[in-house]
Length: 403
Image (tube, rainbow, N blue to C red; front, side, top):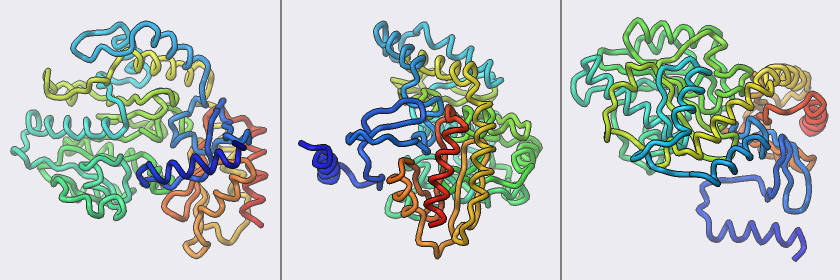
């Protein structure tokens, strides 16, 4: 079978046997190394999505691969019925790196969000004194925190909600970036404010300067827990270890995932002060795979790689250069260019015909990126990208956007 026929066959099987809950670009990838990937035809592409920031350390990083293989040959899973020799070192290292007091490991980002929701509600009843079943959590419009039933229940995206109800109560929605709206929405029953430092799925929406600092002060004053969802923004993506560092803020709960494994394994974690996670007692929350020795070994090496190989600093440096280059592109169809670190976006006017056509053209030139919310392209390559590679990408992006 020739390569073209093989690609067609892959697409046909996916269409026939898979649920149609994604609309990927029609490229069948088979290999990855650092910021580059190859398809089954042997064509090489610069990955400018990094699996939605799950492979910040680059594809198949050799140090993380070795840590995974070494641990997989010894012990992979014990459940939390027994202890393992990787969990405590993981706790020590991630808490020291992020200045956290406690950590609760899970698997997916959505699980971390659900865990945080459960914990702050329990804290509200047992510590703050909210009446039973009256706890409220405030979220922002255009949020994205996952796709579980509870989470889509407080989404404002019609496509995420339609025909999935009924939804659980207990959530209020306020405009993103409006600290005054948050304060006006707080009641005695408010236990937490859940927010992304930068809204990723909404199109890399950056709030006004000082917003995160302002909501931190509001939450502190009203005894409301601040939950920062850093599953996309965290672990170097914005040029800092955590995006909260840009405004010198420490959340009560910080959620990390995706790049916590460097793309090798589903790993997430809730990082918290002792007061919130301290409300949990044995049997009240858990996961068979959460905190397993394979996950912990992978996460430990993934964090070391980020720090020791200067990836966070590179994200800040190359991100600023990439953003400057994108802003120089002249096209009346472009509405805005924005970003922080290597979390970048080009937004087009609604009458420009959508962003996907540009993604398809860039694919032909060897760049993989993806549209979000129809009119925006995200550029978020692995944090290993070099200046020469940014130049290579910018030349092709400009060619596509100005033709």
